[in-house]
Image: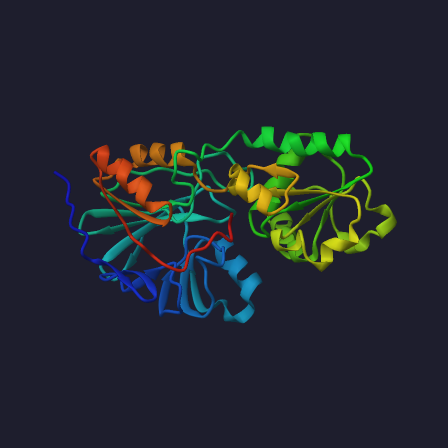
Amino acid sequence: MRKTNINWLKKKREGLYCVPGNFFIDPVLPVEKALITHAHTDHARPNNKSIFSSKETIELMHLRYGESYCSDFQIARFDEKIKINDVTVQILPAGHIFGSIQFLINYKGYRLLISGDYKRTKDKTCLSYEPVKCDTFITEATFGLPIFNHPNDESEVKKLIKSIKANVNKTHLIGVYALGKCQRLITLLRNLGYDETIYLHGALTKISDFYSKNNIKLGNISNISECSRSEYANKLVLCPPSSLNDKWSQKFKNVVKGYASGWMRIRQRVKQKNIELPLILSDHADWGEILKTVNDVNPNEVLVTHGREEALVHYLTKKNFKSSALNLIGFEDENE
């Protein structure tokens, strides 16, 4: 019979705290030592004294926050087990975005797996998720409802290519998040044979250049500011979702507005945001992938966080998994 007592993991104002290791995981307030699963701003906050994460995540935090990203850092490597006080920590890929990782924390033989955000769909911009057996599994539930069954990502991107071909006099303005979604959409387009220059809002260029420098092939990309207004027709322009309806977007007069997100499954959101071309493209696990992952890691206990917690807890309890909600605060959907 596996152990079920995990009283050495605590919720504090700063976030999730490992008592014997004396560290926090993805804290929402600055702490002495933080383990960071990935570089989205709801998980990777500035001003921690010491951070432990993948090389890519640390570099992305530096890129986004400058010198306030931390005072000191330690790079986590997939082939190492790191001793932090009385616990052993190792990392596995999470499949969420470039550099995203899970933490497997072992204390006195008890194995706790903290997934961060993850997905099971293959993504050329990051390493694929790796399941590992554990005693307690902490899973996200961003799309933890049966209604969320993400379609094939290439099929969704083909809709965009088809629309571009059918609307040669229009500019396609597509909302994407700067870190992860933007670069994944570009790689999917390239994989489907779209070789035209893809234009970016200025807020997307810095991170996209970082991806390119790290051998993530994005093809020919350019800042839209380098293009004159007379040349906007038949251009594909990616921008932050917040820019779809702000003053910046008003310079595009003949537009097809799209939005790449798992939330485009919800028709009301599509209507509210006035989206003509919804692309259901998510960097999170859907309902089926969450259940598959729980079965793959085969824990005795599942703790559910930042998402549709109640539905998933109810379902897993019915399937004889000990399950409860962590009710952590401070996690938004910047990454979605």
